[in-house]
Length: 470
Image (cartoon, rainbow, N blue to C red):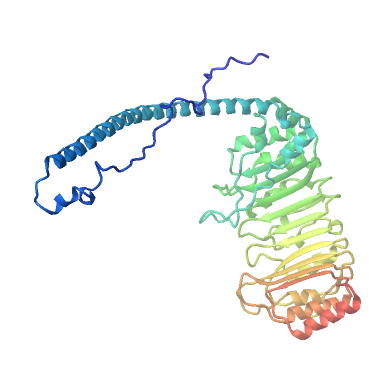
């Protein structure tokens, strides 16, 4: 391809030549008898110290000195005039140089933009395999929408504001990127449904469009509450229909809803043949919603995460299948009763990872809670949440005294969440008793916000060193 004709003049600054007028002159002035201080003159200096009249010869000498100095003044004036003229010309030249520099800067910027435009066409991103692009697009998704504090007087503990699905914007970038979204329908399989965000007649269109784009990919669905004005009824029909008609494709399900919505789930059988992960969160002051969770078929369920639901023991998940279980709460008083927590743990024979938040509560009458052995449990995280009331006491020591954990590797205990007061030393003592009783191969222990007796700590280290597990 022929290059464009150069538009720049063949110009470069002169580096010097033999012309005497090429460079700006540098003046060096010498002092002569004509302009030296007259007081220092050997013959004429005397007249500065007297009123004597110079002789004709001396007068002639003085007149000659004056004439010579005036000639030099005239020469200096002439040189100064020429330099002033030169300075004016240089100032004009400098102004023109500034204008030309601005023009050159603009041209450089224009050419740089032109280069960038063309380099984009050669970008490696354009040649990136569709599989790599699909993986990048996958990491732009927000699923599920994160929990935030609700607006004042909303009546809910948590809300889940929505954000735009980035895939809609990605599809507009180029045909290639749009083709990737078509070739990898699993990108559309992460469905965030925000109740009260859309008009009632828009739910079906929104949900149906995204599920249609997902092809036959397993679905991850999150149903949450956006914090808007809520009707005192059930979930929108389109949402319930989605759970029923797409249930055979749902592999991960999040229900982050105010408690008033859970009764509507009883309208349909909760059958999810391939569901592996289930996250349940009651985001209002109603914590007793487990009775409304009557599951028909969950043969693949392995992960169960519960937040702010105090009666999960009243529901019917396949406890024996669960390998990862979390029961936490944001609000004091929403935790499970201690005897129910023990009953639930006993039912999970395959449990390997467990996280429990327990409120301070009256202890179960001795003898009413039997021992629970969890042979597969390797990681246990326990937290006690402080709440005001009479007859409330630490629950972690009681819980640990009824557990046998022969395979435990990782134990984390946090006492009295929500208050600066430390728990009594009985809690750490119960940890030491558990480890000694079970001979667990513990490799990691975390304990915070509780008192520790030196004897318990020393005994724990001695026991671990004897077993050589730390």
